[in-house]
Length: 323
Image (tube, helix red, strand yellow):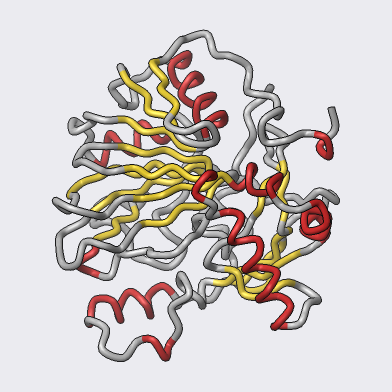
């Protein structure tokens, strides 16, 4: 079966692992809850392999009742999935924990737009491991979308166009927030805005990347996109909007209602996500650890390349496990 004949429903699933987990799918296309696992750096290799297979199959998986996790244990567990990145290319890490990116709503840590993590570099993470530290009493859910299914949902002509297109991603957008939007924002949000842009990154990615572990095509887009390469601004805007509408179709998404102690792990190579900003001034703190990814490669075999900025201090080039 070639890449061109694989569909979202017929794509080959990862080889079944030796350990059977309690996996409850949340939708047909994306998301599953895993039960009966206490996450730690001491998990045996068979269990880690089973978790990894579940992530590849379901795109994002969730664990309840992980309140025993500390920043150190979260890092130790995440390291079982691969070599880790630094916390963030431009933003300060959690004090004393250089591999943890803290998103604190009271200090501007809100990301209310569809995005894939750190696509403004040439080496976006493979996996993100997010732990709920403090959650609002109402609101603050996160939604994930399956970008492999979205690719196959495109009309054939748009899909064929996407196969050949490339696009610039930059951190100078920061989830679509522009300098003219800054008036009246809290000081903490302004500090985050300028810290995020303190070192400029811009990368040209293929619109369609080939997943290095499953071989599936997926849309590599989101809120850091600037403009399609070789396409004028108006046409680029229209095409990117058409792609984005398909990614965010409700049928293509799963929504998670957090409680403190929950953990979500998603495949950053096959998803976008959206943290819903509907909790006013209630506290919301989450900690993210990311696993290093490979440089994306398009259907034509051309890799992404950096135009501005050097991300080597942020992340090594990830490795793909042997089949």
